[in-house]
Amino acid sequence: MTMRELIKQQFESLLAEGRRILVSAGWDGRTYRNHHPGASDYYRFRTTALNLVRRSCGETSDHYKELVRLAEANETSRNGFYLSHCFGIAEAAQRDFEAGVLFDMRALIFAELLGDFIEQAEALLEAGYHVPAASLAGAVLEDTLRKLCEKHEIPLPDSTSIDRLNADLARVGVYDKLIQKRVTALADIRNNADHGHFERFTKVDVEDLVRWVGAFSADYLQ
Image (cartoon, rainbow, N blue to C red):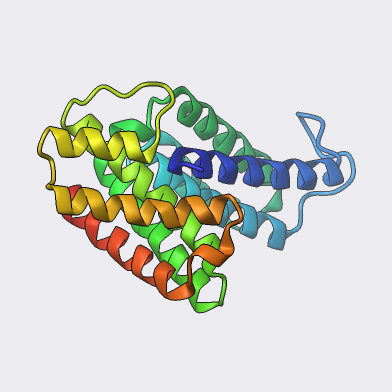
């Protein structure tokens, strides 16, 4: 799963939760037929939306600014009625994300996203879940390679692989053969995790993967 797919999945999950709350409240597009959403549901949805929209669209985006306004204004900060407004903003942000008008244009946001996902992989490791940590760190590695290809104007086909990206980057001298071999070895851990070959790697291998990918991304995406 690529980074873009992970963000898409988070948007889908957020909007599914929002729809559940709105349906329960009897929202018909204009008013609530049953009751206003509860404060706890409103806070939870708004907080998640703020975090996701900030990371995917940026703090200067209209979507993020409008969510912040709802969170800070006295009239809207504690009133569950405005959950429908938050939902509409999140939906608009998802559409822009899907259209590619936000995510791929912002290298700084991309770097921040990578850091967030590396932290998630570290948290998974600490909790004892080294297999999903390997998959997540592998997604970060693949998206870092994609971003490096874009940075160095290396053509990207619609469908590619870490091996192809890695070979192209080494071929044009973005990094040397030692880095290329390292990427190949770490990509193998991710592939084994994704395909259920859990006996082919250890928790220590994943710890090395997460640590190395974090440093690599920070060094090469400056």
